[in-house]
Image (cartoon, rainbow, N blue to C red; front, side):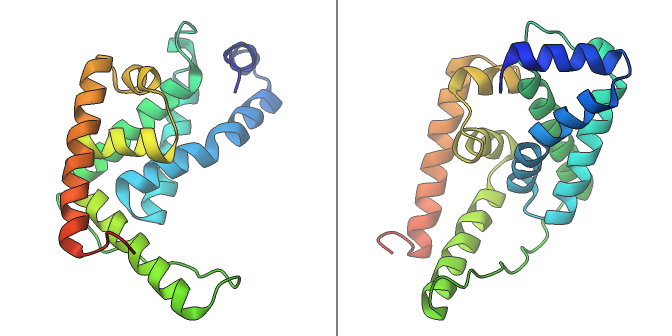
Amino acid sequence: MSKDRDTALISDCRKGDRNALETLVRRYERPVYNAAYRMLGNPDDAADITQIAFLKVFENLDRYNPKFKFFSWIYRIAVNESINLLKRRGNQEPLDDRQASSLRGPEALAEAGRVCDCVQGVLMELQEEHRAVIVLRHFTECSYHEIAEILQIPEKTVKSRLYTARQIMKEKINALGLVGK
């Protein structure tokens, strides 16, 4: 995902080029959805947040500052919208069952699904500030610098929050007996 290519696409979007708009959506829809899903734990909410994030982006294209990466801007919008939804909701919803792949046996799938559900459950128990750094680092594979840019916090704060979040997750996963499985 090239910053120069994104800047050119945004420039074309500002001129009304629908193909440029579609290209940006195709390029970032899945990563934005994945970040929202990991923040919210609900596929429907994640889809809604993805749509809201893209709407906000395209309503505010004139405010985009090209000195920053486009994905940092859209991820920031998605993370903020996810946090806002969590605050409005005030509680957590249970996770949906996972679809199983036909490549593994039923016992392996059941165990993998249980582990995945437990890890997602632990992730959902984290405070939003800790969940955001875990999602951005481990699920969207952002660098520390990119996370700092997205969350608009110092890189040292990213590292500190990530360390704390990992420790909390480790303790909770150990308490669930998932280590070594």
